[in-house]
Every structure is written in C-alpha cells, then in structure tokens.
Length: 526
Image (tube, rainbow, N blue to C red):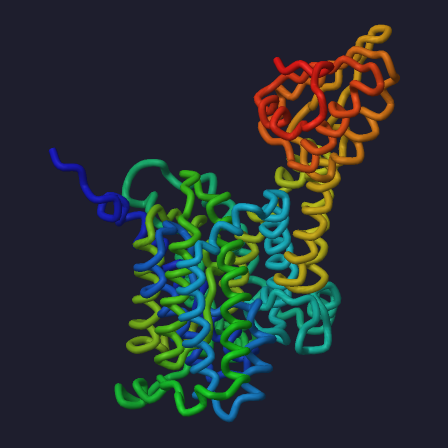
C-alpha cells in the first residue's frame, strides 16, 4: 500500500493548529503595525506573506513567520525618515533580496555556533515576558501593544511596573473572568484531552476563543457592566467592499532606489531579520517533539522571499517568530501545512469576516499566551541548566535577564557575549599535564591545542630541567595549532644543547619533524 504524503497523514492535526496560530497571530500583527507607525493592514499583509510564502519556501516544519516585535524600533525610525511609506517598502524589498543572497553565501551556518544555553535562555525569557506582558491584558489594561517584547513601554511604564499598575488601576471584572476561566481550562485540557477519537484534535486555544466571544456577548445581554469594550477586543480594519479591501495593499515607490538611506535601511533589516529568524528557528527545533533540524541556509532564502513579497504588496518586514511558532507547537502541529494554512486563514478572515474577528476579547488571547509562556519558562528548564554547571547556568540566566530588561535583540547579543566568554574560559583550563619520575618526564596534551594554549605549553616545557628524558604525548589531540608546533619545534631543537632526550608520540610527529632544522639525534618520533 502506498504511504500517504506526510502533510496528508497529519492534516487533522495541522488544520486545527493553523486556526489557533491565525487567532494568536492576528492581534500580534495589528499591534506590531501600530507600534511601528505603519498602516494596521500592513501587519496583516506581513502575516499572510509569512505564512504562505515563507511556509512554502522554508524547510522548517513548525516555524511561523510574520511581523516581529524586535524590528519595531528600526521600522518606526525608518518610516519617519523616509519620504513615504511606499519608499520604506523599497527597503523591505531590498532587505529580502539581501537575505536571499546571504543564503547563497551559506551564512545560515552561523546559527550553529550559538550556545544552547543562550537558545534556551531566549525561550525562557520570552516565556517570562509573555506572562508579565499578558497579565495586564488579562485584567483589562491595554496601555501597551500586543506582541511587545521591550522592557520600556509606550505608556511610560515598563514590563515590571505595568503589572502592579494595571492591577491597581485597570482591574476589570469581565476580562478577568474570561481570562481566568480560559486559563484554568487550558491547563485542565492538557491532562483531560482524550488520546483517541476525533475530539483529540480539538485544540484548547480554539475552544477558549469561542468561549471568550460567547461569554462577552452574554455579558452584553445579562450584565452590561461586565461587557468588554472595543479597546479590549481585536480591532481588524473593516473594508466596505472588495475594492476597498484591495485598496489597503500598497506598492513600493522605486523612484527612491538611489537614496543611500533606502539601502542602509534594507541592509539593517536584512541583518537583524536574519539573526532573529536563525535564532528563532534554532529555538523551535529545540522544542520540536520530533527533534527535526532545519536547513538554516534554506531558511534565509525563505525569509528573503517572504520579505520581498511582503514589501511588494505593502507589508512590514517579517522574521520567524517564537511566540507564533510556540503556539503552533503547543496546538499540535506536525508539518508546515499548519504554517501555510494560517496565512490563508488570515487572508480569508480579514476579507470575509472582519466583524466576527472584532468580537474576540484580548483577555481570551491573553490566556492562550499565558499558557504558552508558562510552558516556555517552566521550572524544569532552570533546574536542568543548574545541574549542568555554572558554565551553562550563568549564560542561560544572563540571557534571560538581559532580554527581560532590554529587548530581544540586545538581550541575545549580551547572552552571546557572556556565552562566548565562558566558552573561551573553558578552553583556558589546563590543557597540558606533566608527570615525572625522577628525570623521566611525560608531557601530555589533554585535548586539542589552540593558540590560547601557547603560554601554558611553553611554560611547562621550559620548566623541564637539563639532563631529563621527555616524552611529549599528542595522542589525545586531533588538532594542534601551528603556533604550538613552533613551541614544540623550538624545544626539540634546543634539546641537544640541554642534554635532553625527547620522544614525540602522536599523529603530528611527522609535521613536527618537518619543522625541525637543527641536528635531531636527541629527538625520537614514535
């Protein structure tokens, strides 16, 4: 019997997951567009392009792309400095082309050098931020845009101060009731969801959204004081007709192609979007239940294609986004069919049912994101890093704190710096051991010898007294830096004059032999 294609075999898991992702993505797209100073519909366009275009081109099975909070500052500054929004779209297109060129240079391999402690720190930090940022939405406060990851907020508060402020000044019964019941249901559904039968495909977040809409409509009928106002509902632009809907798309003004600002903005977007996408995809690979590995160079090409299309039709720049991708994983998606379908659902919903979408309370979506945030920053993540030792735990915690107190990109850079410091520090541990019995010395390389081990090697060899017999054992080293060859060479050349007998063991003996120019009657290669 012919085996079903994978996307067909898992269709009943991917379809409901795609609906959940679309519902989560919708307010995030709108919020990021608002914070970027761009037309609201431009965020939806980027979400559609991220789903359909990047979904088709990418080989990642679970990553979901769309407008990213990490780009809002760059986008806002660029739009304000450009002659028009259409001029900014040219920079988005250029950024997409540059990303596609990055893929041809195999730049995606850089993601593989990011320490796992930084990746898990990024996931945990985003989980904490989701919890801290969504609690205000859950109690009825909407002073900050949906999808914000920055510490400082537009309302003058920050991630930490907004929490007590919203509870003290904006606690509203209606949103709190919906969010609380929704959150309890989501945690219960994790345990109570049946393992067999069609109901197992029903995602909890979808139930929560439907419940939120029905509950708020009941509030309007039964207790208007509990009803949630328009500012705490999804706010999709409503078109009067197909022509009005088509009018919300825009095209780039390529007459500005010669402006240096357009090119520098395009390059900035390409670099930052590529970095965020590569790290996001690597992070999603970490939480993929099947532990699949994404081709990072292909991902750069896919992201570039998505940005090119988004820019051509009026959308914001996009990246792979952890929040949407995590929602995709938690909703039970298996293949990238979910990602692609979520783009179609965004397109169809804003075209056909924008009024229905505007009935969704942000409190219901806050419950979904709180649930995702808890899973991203679960206690076990911290415990496991602690057990792995300080060299893993410190970069992990620093990354969490840095992202929480700054923003995603700055926090990642700080985490990378600390992570690399610990990598270098570990390599500074003694790499050379010396043992001796009387005048017989054994100098052994414990591992590969790099340039940072030069001083240690030189010091150990120079301490060996005259008249000794020395064995230099390189069997455990698969790599020896040429600078270290030079040190061994100098010691061997000087051995005859110090009455030292030298034996060199390991695969590098012939290389050292070719370097030694002095008489070698005191040097033996084994």
